[in-house]
Image (tube, rainbow, N blue to C red; front, side, top):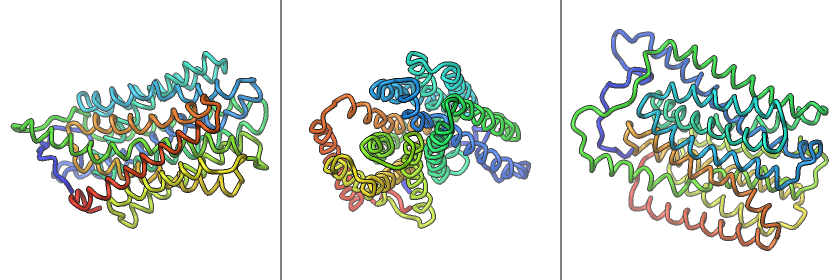
Length: 413
């Protein structure tokens, strides 16, 4: 594992496990806190992505156009990006805990706004606010999980967040299929889950020492820290664009070009469950089997194959082909997300971990705009060109990473 050459002293008083004699209860408390963080990330992923399962029902019942709903889905990223950047750096400066709590409250506020009204302007503002809150939670809690468990903590956090992305839309689609009030009930369920998870995490956090900012101890050569930042980003960022571009192509765009026997909301939710479920499972398999950094290369290759195959698929897309594409793109998303996070945590200076995590997720979440881009083009030929270019760029990423790994072992697992 690469070293950032930055020594971190025991200046953080919250979640870093120690072997101090007076901290006998701390490992158990930290374990409960880690579980609470995973619950909060699961709920955050649910609240962030359950809207995907509601798009068909809202199109039918609220008579909203597909382009409007794609815009509502995509505007989430505009709130998310500043949330990720601000949240990560702020959590380094003031501590993970307050940023996580503020993010949860903001996420809840946006969800409640959409619960009260499904008018297009309210949906746009609500999704924007949800994105801001989700960005704060993801950046702070992923870094917090890494504080507790190292790079493995960040990887598990990514897998659990992906599980929330998977289960939320499926549950929303199932609820929306049950009747006219299904959309309202889905927003209510998302709000309740966020409240419950935040409460669990707050209670667990009270059992550890007070949160404090991370500061490096002793004299810190600027060049060493700069090299750690540059190394972390140079490994992680090339993988980032393919994480959520792959996922959203699979569960937002592909289902609109398929005919299934399922009701439209349930079909959308099932697509999200398959895509993000596969993404989460492949991350857990990679962890259990100790796949090395070449797994990131494989993820980029699968992304390239998925984009190329989607561009070449007949219209409408046959059910078997569509499901196969969801599996391939889900595996691609999971592998590049996991390996990017581990690359980042392996090289990042600890006192900048939140900021760099936010930067990684910022680049990865740009992919949430892909469905809106493809639908706004309104041309199958233009969509094929976009997907072809993405396939070429993802393949170039895979080749570049493979070549670099031959020269630089980087990390062993």
